[in-house]
Length: 83
Image (cartoon, rainbow, N blue to C red; front, side, top):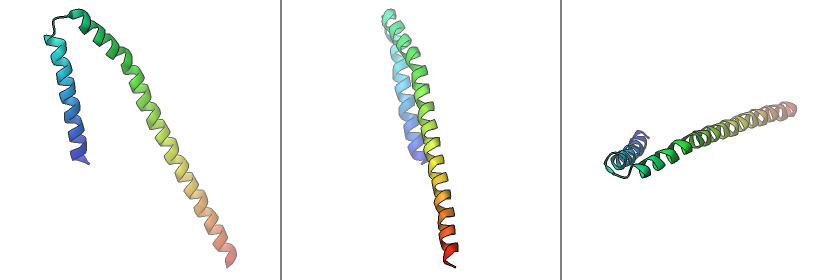
């Protein structure tokens, strides 16, 4: 698990390193400004998407938990009637 996370973080670090290399060495300042504007405008949407996915995952897990709890209590009632 940690190896997977470390690999992912290494790839992210390399990508950010390449991006910063282009920002600091490329001479066209208007392109840098345009890229920075696009990244900064897209960042809140990306964070909102991540937040939305975590909320969906939370509600799905909560639904599975309560469904299991309900089915378990239903099975207990069924087997209680049999006695």
